[in-house]
Each structure stands twice: as structure tokens, then as C-alpha cells.
Length: 185
Length: 185
Length: 185
Image (cartoon, rainbow over all chains, first blue to last red; front, side, top):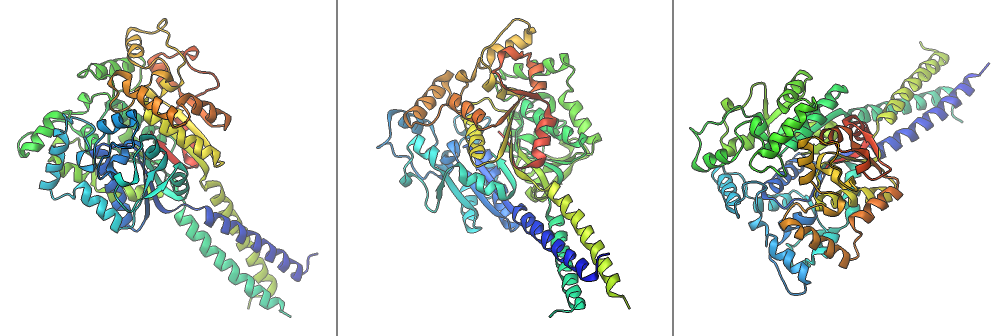
């Protein structure tokens, strides 16, 4: 028969084993984090992204936004044509020059739809996209410009607003692994 | 040397500590929940949202759908113009009057594409969007109409179908924090 | 007063209880998995999906891609009209015949936009969509063709590339339940 000392030792080992499994679970548990891919460059969808991002940050969550492809337009302060290839120039000419000229995903009618949406937002005292971007910064939302998209479209750093991080898809995936909420917008 | 009584006390404290950490993990563990943002008002995408929502609910998951922006059209039973501002009237005129007139995201050709899709679904005995909405209700799927979008577009309660909850982005984020699956559609 | 033997027994039972709760948490903990719904058939969005999928697989994650609706075009090697109903033929005629003819979501201009994007990718030595699909296969990414969409559009197996799984929405939901990242693209 097992003595009390032996049973105690067994227990001690069991507790040690459980402690390791708990520590492992703790490390793998999702954090209060939100990771967003902003792929779209449509004013309405981008507004949706920022409403979610600033809302989550205000609730105390860590938020990161990964801007890729058309989404990079949100971060542009101007468009430079020098230093771009022919196709990059064409792409730049057909893309919005800055956040101010983002179209809406529907009924845009050459920018009229976007103007109407902005005007409706003003009359309802909803923050403009540019104010939401500022608010996101103040709340500590990380904004990451996709390197591959920048390289592809030949967008130089001087075309983008300041205070951005640069990163590849691994930046998003690393954040998303730890996040409770990941969205592709 | 430690006595058996002392070792027992240490163990008891360790077990208490582990119990707290486990309780914390349990509270933070994601639940069998799905949280969907239905941003799009395109028939095809909205069908995708309802197929996922009803599928998950049938599998026993808690499902909530947060309808925002164009997605609100799914919940409209009619369009009233009185009480709307000029821009809200324009927006209403350019938006579908109800779920019956949602366009498809591609090859819509002024509604022909949507009619073809609905007809293909009928011939294959796939439930219509309206049947899926009913099924979702029966399965206990929560449907939340985004307050901010409603306010922005001046959509009154009498324009929407019954049995909806109203809520802001915090409703979605609260659900999403607990969910295993969150999608932006 | 409790004897040492009794206290030991209580401890043993507590440890057993904790062990069960830990095992339960371990089973319910999200895995290093990514589950993607590829709904879109736009070249740019599909590229985004494959960059995320191959990136995650390269980081050692289990990845599954569920191709539905327009996303099925990515998996088509050709289009057959025989055996399709009138509407299915119309849908097939208006859809891309294979991954080679996917449009871009913006500024497509009857395929010119897609050609420009592909050309920009070549000049920057970014893998083409077809190369990414091959890479995804090599990395063990599971590709699932949505049965319901196939049935709806009358797409036969001989129109699709080889090595695919077939499945319904439950395939996606099952994977998504275990995943850290689920996206609707």
C-alpha cells in the first residue's frame, strides 16, 4: 500500500504537470485584440473599418489595421508620378489621390455618391474619415502599410501620411493569431 | 526538513492558485459563437451570410448578425420618403426598397442578374433569401440593425421588418469577443 | 479535525477535477489554423486570399480555403456548356472561364485592369495567381469547392482543376471553429 508520503509526492508531480498545461493554455489563449485587413479603398467600407477599430480601441482592445491594395489609398496624402513605371502611373492615375477622394462602393456616380455620404455624415455630426484616422492614432491603433502592395504600385514613403509601420502579410498573421476578432474588409 | 503537514498545505495553496487560473481561462475561452457583420447589400453576399448563419445555428452555435450600411436593405419591408432629408431621400431612392430588390454584386444588369440567381435557386430547391431570414429567426439567430446607419440614412423603425434588435458597433464587438468565428461580409 | 489522510484525499479529488477542466479547455482551445471563405472572383481579392493562405501555411499553420460562388472561377480550368440549363449557360457565359480571365474589382475596363495588374506583378517578380495556387497545394493548403454553388451553377467536376475536396458550409464552419483566423474574402 502507498504511504502518505508517496501519495503526497504523486500529487506534487500531478500539480506540477497541470501547472505546465495551464501555462501553455494561457500563452495560447486569444487576447483582447482586433486585427483588420483593410483591402478595400471604398469610403463606405473604410468607414466601417475605422468605426470597428476605434470602437474596439475605446473598449480597451489592442487594434491593428493592415492596409493593403486599394486600402493604401486611405493613407495617401498625395500622388507623385515621377519614379513610377508606365503601368504604375496608370494605376496611380486611376486610383484616388488621397483619402479625400475615395469613392463609395455603390452609386458613386463619379464621386457624387461619396460627397453625399460625407455630407450626410456631417449633418448627423458623425466624425469624418479623416477625424476617425486621427482618433484611431490617439487611441493607439497600429496602422501598417503593406510593403508588397507599396512596392507593386510604386508608392513611395513621401506619398503616405506619417506615423505608419511597414510590414508584410506576416505582420497581419502574427497579430491575427493572438486576436479574438480578425476581419477582411 | 518540511513536514508532511507543511507539504500538504503548500499543495493546497498551489491547487487553489491553479483553480483561479483555470477559472480565468474558462471565462476567457471563446464560445461556440459566430458574429457576422453584414455590410453588403448584394443578394449573393447576403445569401452567403445567411447560409453561414443558419448553418452555424443548426450546428448548435449562438449566432448574431449585425446589419449595417447597405446590409440594412435586407431588413427593409418598404421605403418611406416623408421625414427624410433631401440627401436621405436620394440615398433611399438609389437603394433597394426591400430584400426583394437586392442586386447581385456582379453582372446585375439592372436587376436581371438577381432575377436569374433567384430563378436558379428556385429550380434547385434552394431556399430563397426571405425563407432563409425566416429560418434564421426560427433558429434563434439574433439580428441587430446598426443604429448609426439607420440614423445616418434616416431609416425609421416602420420601414424595417419586426423582431430586430437595435445596437451600435459595441454590440458586434461584444459578441465577436466571445466568438470563434467573426466575419465581415 | 481533518486527518492528513483525509486532506490528501480531498486534494487528490481536487486535482482530478482540475485535470478534467484543463483537458476540456485544451480541446476547446483554438488551434494554429486559418479558415478562409473565398467568395469573390476578383483577381485582386483572390490574390489577397492566396497571399494570406500561403503566408500562414509557410508559418506552419493549417490552412483551408472554401471556394464558393464567384470564387469557384479560380478553380475552373475550362467552361463546358453542354449539360447546363439555359440560366446556367448564361451565368457561365458571363463568368470567367478560368483563373486566367478573372477581372479586378476596380478599374477592370473589360480585362485591361487585370492584364495591367498581372504585368505589374511580373515586373516585380511577384508570383502569379496560378503559381500561388501551386504553392498553396505544395504547402498542404486544403482547397474545398462549395457543393451548393457547384450544383446551383451546374459546374461539373471536369470543369474544375484536380485535387479539390468538395463540401458544404459545414466544412468551413467545422474548420473555422478550430481556427484562430477566419476571413470572408
